[in-house]
Image (tube, rainbow, N blue to C red):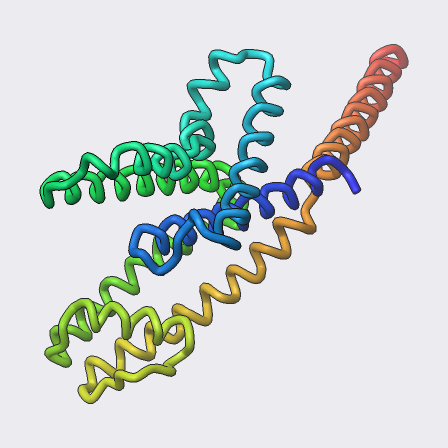
Length: 252
């Protein structure tokens, strides 16, 4: 297994951990889970440790530390233990927070810390997913799909006289499940929109499958080596052609 393949797999691990981290923090913000309790605390701490090791190992290996720091701000934000720091702050300050306005500001600060952590993790994951999105031009397909999704939701909302949020939900469900959902179109425009969204969903799924295959199967090192061999062969042919031309000139 070469370095390129290992890097791709490592990038996928980072993206997977980033998704888990973002979801945990979001669930903590809306009070569905508590990151200070088990097992969420252990999972969050483990992810934080992995991100921290990733950051400092890359910092140590980088030739230009200053440039690394400037280009990896999101990575740094992602490893700052906002939640743990705020938990300590909450213990020391809770006794003095007696007024409701202070409690409200306290709660907003907690959410701000959580959102800052999310921003950092998303920024970190984005760098790792860029190479994948650029494979086969998949990023442009996603842009086109998003435009079709929003346009379809708008048409459906107008034609079916449905709230835009519900229309957006319907458009997303229709494109991802090929028509399965709790809302069904009753007008011709709505049904035509559904067909377009279904075809878009099928196309995007096929493009995703193709992109994943190309991303893991294509080896840049082999491509570079192949190009080098082609250049060598071309140089050899040029040399042979020049030698023949020189012989012809001598004979003449």
